[in-house]
Image 1 (cartoon, helix red, strand yellow):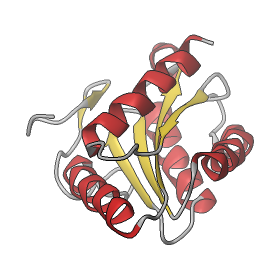
Image 2 (tube, rainbow, N blue to C red):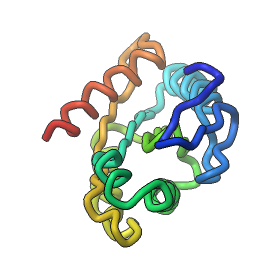
Image 3 (cartoon, rainbow, N blue to C red):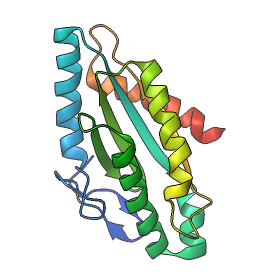
Length: 165
């Protein structure tokens, strides 16, 4: 991702360590924590799962209700992720309506439990008018010797399948 960031509507998003809209860390932090946690998991033979989450339906919401409702929905989605994750997990806003979560000490079965908790809590967290948004998910745990970027690629492939459903 370039330094210019990602956009939701007309609002530029920071590409640094923190996201001013949500209070979550940003894409630079995501890259650093991914590499560190995948390496830690391999070194100590521990579990870690990467989850990529996107709000589907943002364009339609923007067309119907405008940027303020979208911004509010993105903020509420971030808070939902923060509430449903543990303090040892890393929640990051990747840009737009896309988030990443690194679930430490978590295998894919436990990650599915996290996904289901967010899937259940997500609609209740959305502001009025944003009931058309849907949380979509992709997740993956590293395979032996797999680079962090490849883990994210597998999680994003799974996300695409969820978006299409």
